Image (cartoon, rainbow, N blue to C red):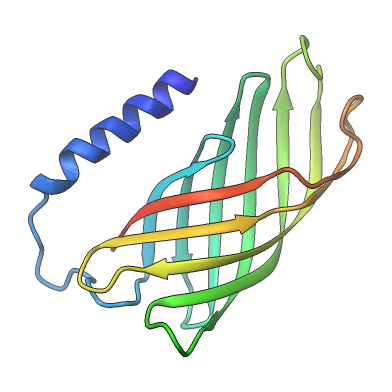
Amino acid sequence: MRRSIFLIAVIIFFAAPNLKAQEGMNTSSSYTTAVGLKFYPGALTVKHFVNDEVAIEGIGYFFDYGFRLTGLYEFHHDISDVEGLKWYVGPGVHIGFYNTEYYGSTSIGIDGVLGLDYKFQGAPIEASVDWQPSFEFGNNYNNGFLAGTGGVGIRYAF
């Protein structure tokens, strides 16, 4: 699974310089939708703003021991001293599918998120860093509070 994520990252890295700007493409310090990768652990992520201050984010995490889908509802707030920089906070939910070697079960949970989001002005690139604590139910190994998720994201903004 890690090889697949690495391969996707390499393809994006080498393809991005060859992308042509399209009319109406968002290169300002704001964006509507962004697609990319999140690291720690490895994940594919999509973030979409439903209005100027609210975004929804879907994250597919890939572990050695399974897969986890997370949905977040994020409230974004400008940091007035830096154009393109916002802080965000919000609730979410997840479902995890773990193999028998480590956990051997399916679990559900509630999540929270606290982070920073930066849209590079003049480029279709967005980066984020966040912390995503969660509380997991229905799993024999990891029931309870988990504080170790979150990470650094890099996305192509539309």
